[in-house]
Image (cartoon, rainbow, N blue to C red):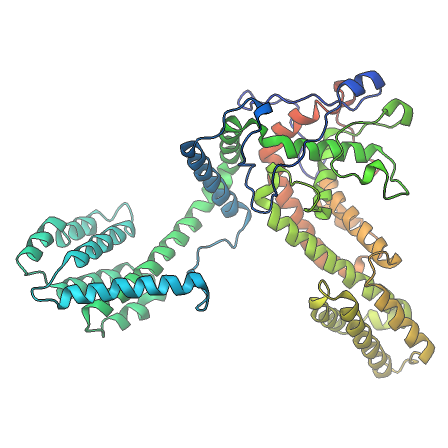
Length: 529
């Protein structure tokens, strides 16, 4: 049966993919071969909080030259291009917006001082006798460049008109003869802005027409031109998105390969992530937190023959690794380089998954006390969800306090709901028990919360393996009360990982073939899930 979920990893690595030379690590049944192929973890050289594709210096042992300043700048530019293209493709809501610095921030105060000093200097130049047009000419030159950048390729007539009206050589001659008419040029520019701006900017341009002071007018023109540039960028993004979506996989893979050529250690963390995932899939969970399994990112495979462990398929290793990203401890583990661009999105998915786990736990406990009749009413269920979500906003910083508020409000709503439906109200003993069980959900080890968390992550893994449609038909028990919310989160997670797998599957396959012996690496139908 063909997997309806994500596509399997490509068995053949294209010639264009050139992997850096890495130590071979094999998970196999031969203890001697496994021992000789062990890969020792490297001590991380820096935090990944602000890290993009490991742009760090190489150690002397790596025998690679340290990146020069020029190479580093080029690499940063390539990373920026890759990140922007990726953001446009995976984030349908991506757009550029006006950057406004906090007024009381140091950066905001410095910028305000610099701007005020510049405009005061311009005013002094224009009011001097004779007028000094040095700054005004520079501003007009910049205005001309902005106006030309707002034109579409087909607008050649307007392009020629701007070139003629704002001929800098001619304007310079006029300035030298004290004949430069700044107000006239400003009005011409305003008329052009009215013709070029989006309808949303009409009002802003019209307000500029009432300004008579030339300095304030130029200041306002630059502000509105900045907004018009932003509008053009967003218009370009909107038109470019379909093309990028069509070619994004090859583009991102090519850009990543260019970065990998410059820095061969760019897959170190990705390799460790996949090695650890493969080991975890074939190692029983320990009962002690001090066991080797709890040592994060372990890279030395155990004796599989002694453990009699069945080796996982490469696709299952990848899917398990994806789900494990939602349990990532950034203080201990370095994030895989191939997923750095999606790190914030994965953190958001992790946060939403935790919120849904708490919500489902609250609803299950509440239903066990009030019965199915009350919870079969959509209006009551939606109200309880809304209240719980609102009160859970303070859960992360203060979980105990948040669950006290949730327990009190939920018990009250259940009491009112039973009363309104003419059902028997909860006794004081049951009410106290309900409140106590709801408050216990604040503990991570809470039984209900743990089971819901496991089933939620299991559902996301099923979505990767079997696809969304089949997973929704076989929805896990206990999660039906959050089916709509969890399904939406599942779509987001699967689409994000689907794109990642399409882009980086050749690299994953190349890494995993050194982890899983070729004889065992045949893709298996995942029936055990």
